[in-house]
Length: 277
Image (cartoon, rainbow, N blue to C red):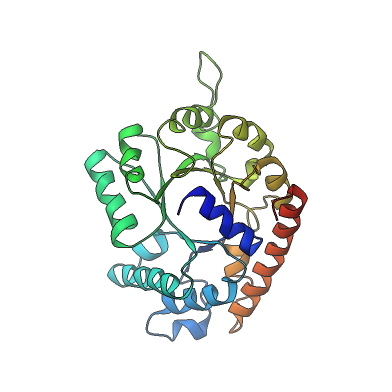
């Protein structure tokens, strides 16, 4: 899927919602825990409830790795289920990989080929050769961490270089944008940094941004959209906890669907305001 095809899905759904599939065993409803594969059962119900309003899903790999081999099987079944029932969905493996060339090539094959994801989140700290392997598959994407929404982003990402005062995230954007194209490279920019989005857009005007932090982390969807949209929308706004844990009872999926609808209606209004739908 290239950028134009992703934008077409956004226009069809009138939404740029990405739902994070982060099934924490400590938060799963009791009814799900009785199932032979609670992670997959939870995901399946969330997917069916939110698919009309989402254009992307983003499983955080930590929630599957931590369950060992059974967790990987749950993840594989989740991807297979989405591919069969909702083939137009954009799937992001939130794996935050990044290593020397051969190792990155292995990670890229694992997620983009063997498991069939469209994109993988990658850490750029080790430089170009650690990211390039993720960009070598036609129709697939690397999602480079640039400016994240967590408090620890202050430690390095916002720190200025002594000579120029340019913050590290800005140097990452300026360097990494040369590695790929708007059809295979996007960037993570946290919603809690929305005051910097206009500046980010001046550096990467044509690229998609994956924006976590709206919802439970307090980011403003309206601010993100008005500062970060481009002529192809250029945004995938991820909501995880605020949707998938909207209710902890047996009707958690119904609550998740309602919350996804609520978010997508706001997104439709913002797309309309921009003249994109």
